[in-house]
Length: 342
Length: 241
Image 1 (cartoon, each protein chain N blue to C red):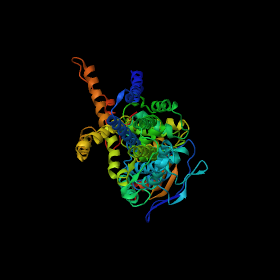
Image 2: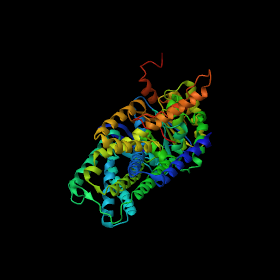
Image 3: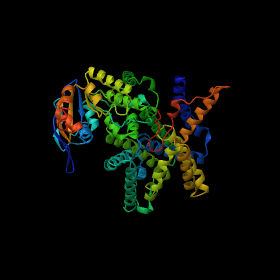
Image 4: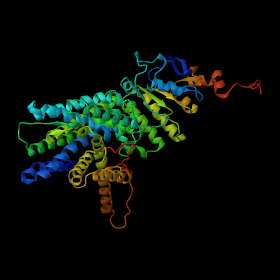
């Protein structure tokens, strides 16, 4: 039983990955490619936020900062062929990670809602500064000129690769010491410290890893769009969107943020095109539904569905279903932390 | 411990309390409400910094170290109001202690080690249950298990029998004895005088933040100053009556 579920755990992602690898060869419209590319970029940021917000329970409203820093560092390095784009992406991630430490040092002294509010303040301050300095292009933005020809497939594979790395990283973290420490901090920071976890150091590390990936996501987007401006990449709506994806998909799980990223990517690309501003309404509605009915997000809902199906199958004629304690194990409580996705 | 003092504003919650605990002892703190037991305890556990004084553990000054550093000095605590990682399983709770404890442990040995500790406190049947469904008695056991998993030399127990039934208290005291017999020193704060005199090798009595007496349980109970603190002054002629 156990080994079978374990085999599926690796088999399904492998099939998915293989499918995504060959899909463009089979033939995809440029529009579909773009939709997938955008989804990959969102998935990266979503998985990153989930490390800090889902596993460690530190709700940040400031991830636009890392998105913006990544976008600008990559843009300036790629522009006029100063550096190979892949190296530029790496530099974007590192720059965002460094910024995350500088932001984390003061803000992680705060807890819960106070931390969340502080991240809003920091990110808005950085956005305002970015709109008012010259090297970002100010409010009129920054255009990237690349000597090599635009190759949509390369963008696609590049984003897919980083997204796959982000999934693998999340999976490994969730199954090892680091993830366990983050979950302990999520549940009770003081008790975690009393058990030997250094909460401050752990939060800083999770923040840095998350910022690294978010920075790369920003860089990927910047190169694809070839034009960025501070109010776009540093915008507060980015922070909210990055936070919403794992919440919609399922906090503290590996696949929740992926599903959330797809949902947001599709909404963003398909619905906004026809109904500008409608996405806000949709996000608001989704959020209310999830917080009220399924705090575990899509993954929580799927788990519940799977349990229900199993119960119906096992029940057979005349034997009542028993509620076992392990069923409650998957219940996820918003605020008191997430059900660990182990 | 040396001349430990803690001021809250102008109020001395604990004043100049000094004592020494020997390896392998169960050392108890008692005292009436507000005597400073909890303050003293939380200073030793690293939750509060003493205003003055020193805490020496095995020749090393550990005064004011944060609790996760104390774990590496071999000092672990349990909580009076239990603080499990609620949504994690009982086994995972103990795994946290094992991973982040003094010896550290690798990925393979941790679940095994955690399971062994669960067996030693009698929680093995609950390994895969989420911690929040446990009863009070089992929560207290989980507190002990998680602290033990860090591999402590000194275990600080804060009212570990509070809220337990008589049978549970007896079982818990037996557990503490077993832990002591494995060479772990135990510092024990308890409200319940009966529990503490039953198990401790030495007892320190606090009153108004000061040390009133320190002796074996038998001697402490006979100490007139202790009787006075707990029962008030005997009225004149009481002895004759």
